[in-house]
Length: 66
Image (cartoon, rainbow, N blue to C red; front, side, top):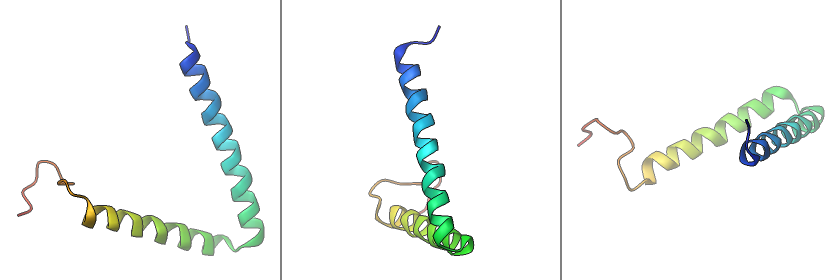
């Protein structure tokens, strides 16, 4: 039997997915799809690089990097 937490998380997930689909539809309607892919992948790559270079703890667990 599902508890209230699972039902609330499922509802939030469904709403987030719906908002995502709506906003992607709005963006793609106004901007070229290839441009959106390039921008989002560039921002994601930049974020991951910043995370790797500025994270204080070791990111690669189990590997000796030094």
